[in-house]
Image (cartoon, rainbow, N blue to C red; front, side, top):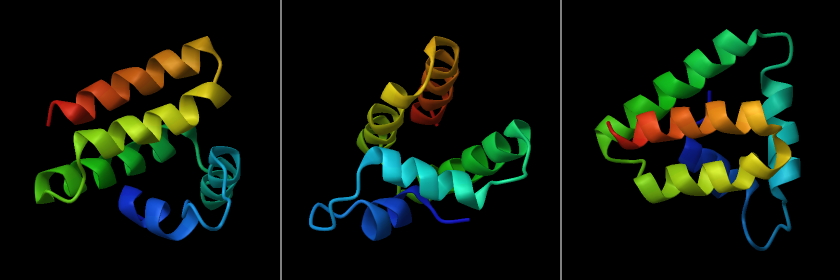
Length: 90
């Protein structure tokens, strides 16, 4: 699995015109066929590993949330916010 920074570096360069929607599609394709629990488990594990290694900042976590939140319904947005807040506290 790619790290959050890898997505930012590879997929969301300002010069390539990639939108948050395009990034979401790329991420979704990587997890096609996996359960929500598996996806969340992998994301949390990678984010926690990166956060503890000092390679993922709270600002990057918040930027991730801001990119994806508009594409989610209210319940999904609330769940993502809880995950983001949890990661920020690490």
